[in-house]
Length: 179
Image (cartoon, rainbow, N blue to C red):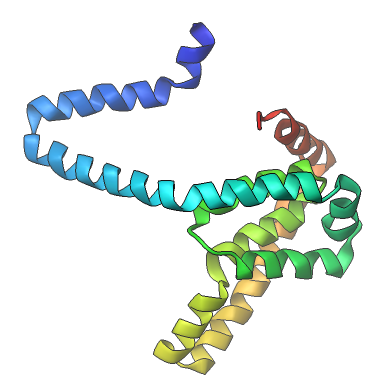
């Protein structure tokens, strides 16, 4: 019981806050509830296909294959695959985190996971095409190049700051998270 409360304490606190807001400011409660329902319905549309694809990835792709493609020693091949995976992904950024967890569980390097998340957030192909037509090709190319260097820099710096012990802890925690 104590672990259940601890696990869901933030959710329970938010429920209490919602109840308090209901009695203090009904208009704020209505607006907040509307936004919450809208966000939850969007998530309900996006997450099931992502989880189905993750289940297929878990079953179809062997750990050894993932380690060779995106593992610690995958080199430029892993970096390019991470960029491609992130750039070709569909859906909002929060849908990328379950994918990142699955990649970590399958043996992908933390650097490549960060690259995939960075590409997911900033270098999506449809976004680039829209941006090129709206802002111009020069702007899009400049932003894209800066994003590539920024993503690589963040991934490499994060890996160095964490060190081997920190990276091992992340992989261990990823393996412990329930499916």
